[in-house]
Image 1 (tube, rainbow, N blue to C red):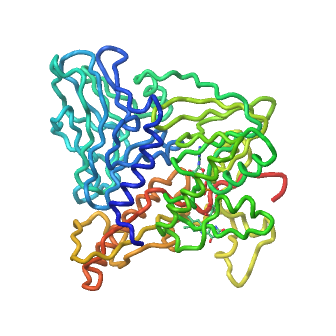
Image 2 (cartoon, rainbow, N blue to C red):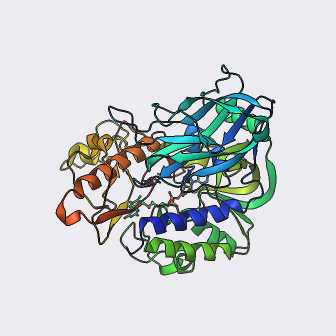
Image 3 (cartoon, protein in one colour):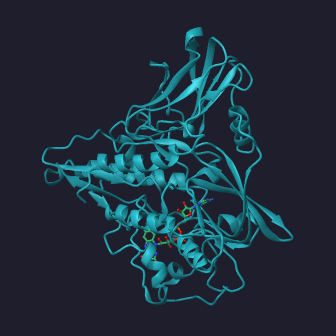
Length: 477
Ligand SMILES: Cc1cc2nc3c(=O)[nH]c(=O)nc-3n(C[C@H](O)[C@H](O)[C@H](O)COP(=O)(O)OP(=O)(O)OC[C@H]3O[C@@H](n4cnc5c(N)ncnc54)[C@H](O)[C@@H]3O)c2cc1C
C-alpha cells in the first residue's frame, strides 16, 4: 500500500483522460441550437481536472455525472468550452444533488465559474437530483466564447451532470426521466440515430471477468467479437477501480485465466492496477475482438423473439452506436441485456417451499417462509496510509448518523451493505453514498486516537462492487 491517494487519483485520471481524450468529439464546445440557450454536458468536458466521470448509474438515472471524489480535499477544477449565441443575461441551472441532506452544511458543495468569475450560488445544496437555480450571469459581446468550470469546495463527493444557460428565466429544464435524455440530446445537437458499427458474430455486453473470458474463448474460435464495456478499464469487480482479487482455479481454463486473472493480494490492494495493465494488454492483443471502452449499452432491438442489435452510448461525447450480431452475451452483472430483451428474471430469495430449501437449524436466515428481496450486499473498499506527520481531516457531521462511534482505518470485503428495502440496481447510488458516510465517519473517529493520528486516506473506490443482482432465468435453475 505504498501508493498515496494523490498518486492514485493522478494515475486513474491520466488513464481515463488518455482513453477519453483520444476521441475526436471529446471536449467539443457546447453550442446553442436555438439562439438563446446552451446546455453544457459536464461528461463532455475536455479537462476533467480531479473530477471523476461516474457513469455507473446511467441506466437508472438516465445520465452520468462528474464526481468530486477528493477524500476530503477539494479536487482540481473541471472545465470545458462554451459558445454563447449572443450577448445578454443568462439564467443558470445545474443538474446536481445534495447527496446527504440534513442539519449540517451539504458535504458536496461546488461553484460554477463562467470565464474566471464564480456565480453567486453555491451548488450541491438541494436534496434529490434536480436543476438547482444559480442566478444569472451577464455575457458581454467580447466573451461569447469562454470557459466554464466546476470548482469543488469540499472534496466530499459533490456532483454535477449538466449546466443550462438560458435567456428566458422561465425556461426551466425538464426533470422527468422519460423526457430528460431526449431533451438533452436535442439541446446539444446530438443525433437520435446511431452510428452503425457493422455485424459481429458475438456481441458481449460487460467487460468484467466473465465478459473478458468469453471474448478470449470466442476469439480462439475465430469469431468476430464486439466487447462493450461501460468503464475505461476492463475487469469489473476485479479491476483497479473496485479491486477484488480473482485468483482463479486454472485447470482446463488456464489459457483463458492466464490472460485476465489476478494473483492473490488483499482486496483493495494497489497491485490491482498492475493486474489491470496485464489484462488490458492481453485483451487488446486479441486479433478478432473490438473493445469499446466507456460505452454503455442502453437498449436492444428484437427480431422474431431474438436479440438482433444493441445500442450503446459513448459516455465522453454522447455518440450512439449500433451493433448487430448473430449471438449476444449478457455479462453486465446486473442482467441488463436479458432484462431489456424481456427475459424472465428473479431477484432476492425464493420461499423455502419452492425448491425444498428449508434448513431448520438456521430458520429464516437460511431460507424464508415467503419470498423476499434479500440479496448479498455491495462493497466499497478503502484504505489509509501512514505519514510522518499528524494528518488533518475536516469534521464530517453528516457521516455520524451512519458511522456512529465505529472506528476503522481500512475496509476490506466485509464492508458490505444491503437492505431488503434497497434494490441493488435502482438504489445503487444510495447504497454507494451510504458507504461513503460509513467510511468517512469511521475514519474521522479513528484519527482522533493517538495511534491513528498519522494515517491519511489513500484510496476509496467510488464504484459499488456488487455481489448479487438480477438473475436471468434459463432453461435450468
Ligand atoms: C468485495 C467483494 C468480494 C467478493 N468476494 C467473492 C468471493 O470470495 N468469491 C466469489 O466467488 N465471488 C466474490 N465476489 C463476487 C465476484 O466479484 C463476482 O461474482 C464477479 O466479479 C462477477 O464477474 P462478472 O464479470 O460477471 O461481473 P462484474 O465484475 O460485475 O462485471 C460486469 C461489468 O459490466 C459492466 N456493465 C454493466 N452494465 C453495463 C452496460 N449496460 N453496458 C456496458 N457495461 C456494463 C459493469 O460496469 C461491470 O464492470 C465478490 C464481490 C465483491 C464486490
